[in-house]
Image (cartoon, rainbow, N blue to C red; front, side, top):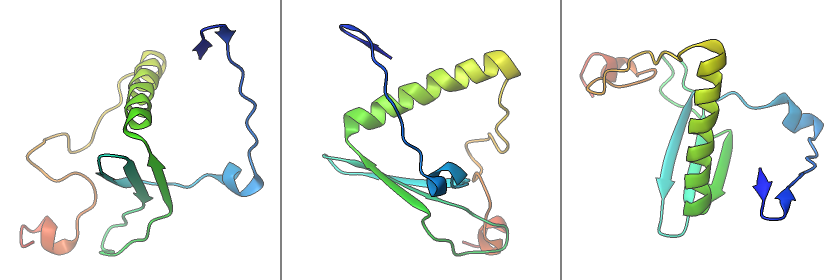
Length: 107
């Protein structure tokens, strides 16, 4: 990251618990005029209920910066490792794990 007066160096402290990370395969994103809320969870096949494992709250400007940083990093990843394939990329079909009723169209 470049700062107007030169590169900025940020020293991160990573606690033992945080270093383990939290796996998430599903995120619920909501917003208000003042903030974006990202609730990270895990959906498992056949389990219709889950809990939020991490909630991140940020300003709209930071959410947009995050979006741009993700796009930049995905492009770098794909340049190094190849295209990331999205399973279920058809926008007319639900993405991710579905409860049995939804998977059968009975929602």
